Length: 125
Image (cartoon, rainbow, N blue to C red; front, side, top):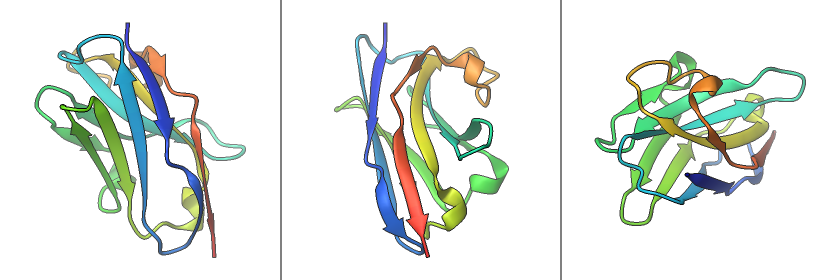
């Protein structure tokens, strides 16, 4: 079974860049899809981006494309989320998730069985 641990959050100023990290372990990730979700205070969990482990093909929520970049390092079993030009509305708990890639549903939290504990990102003006 896959386990994931996310990290890299913190307090940053608007306009900064930030890279979140997700360490995966437990089994081979072939056939898996990794994703990042976020949850802002008082709001529902929101899909940010996902990546197919085998090919590295990314997928972004429409509103996230451009400032968010998901990537993976297969040699280290790591997934990253780079956030550029952060904005106050990016303030949220960001969580990494892993799930089997069944070819659809990758924007739904239900697709993912392994979740990190979440890492807080706070953006101030």
